[in-house]
Amino acid sequence: MSDKTKIEWAHSTLNLWYGCTQISPACDHCYAMRTVHRLKLGVVWNGPPVKAIKERLAKIVAWHKGAARFVKRHGERRRVFINSMSDFFDKLAPQEWRDEAFLFFEEATGVDILLVTKRPQNIHKMVPKRWMEGGWPPHIWLIVTAENEEEAERRGATVFPLREKAAIKVVGASIEPMLEHINHGLLLWADWLIIGGESGGKFAREFKEIWARGLLALTRNTGQRFFFKQTRNKGPIAPDLLVREFPI
Image (cartoon, rainbow, N blue to C red; front, side, top):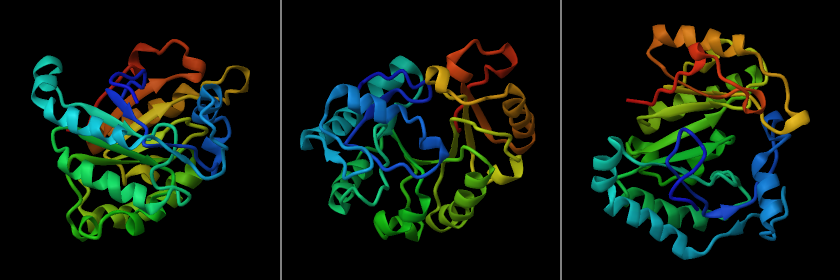
């Protein structure tokens, strides 16, 4: 948990549990796996996650109560990345953990809560029924990973009907690490595109700036918001790519 985070598109992180299961190419060099191992939290990756202390959820309440002060100071609402060290919709995390979190999320209308997942196919079974009946809270954003064309198409096929049925206000595509050129037409299910190359030293996979430039150009016509996070291994960012927009 952190009031501040180095993740450029969020202000804070809140990890309610730790540990995940690798399911796609984006997972191959997972930073969360390395971080959890370094912190010696007793987590076995690709096994059941480990729950954080219950009091962790109280932080959401504190951020909500301090929302007006945060906006006055920063000129924008606090964005909270939930579970940067796991996947909120991983089946190995017990449903009661999510149910407990949803109660706090719904009340914390003063902050924007960002749920990031590689498993959109699980969402309709895991969120409250009222959310799937057009009652998805507007301050809860859904961000789905799409690291290559295969995943952008496969996950997008799930997200399109999901966002319509639940009336999700903000849907993002986390194209990080971006592993290949992705046809923009496969990303029209997202309002917000987050682009980034892979970090990880000599093991970091190829990233070509032209891939990002192509998407940036096309978002100027669709109204999608564009956020360029980093190049491979966090190298210098060309001025024309230093575009960091957020959903309106």
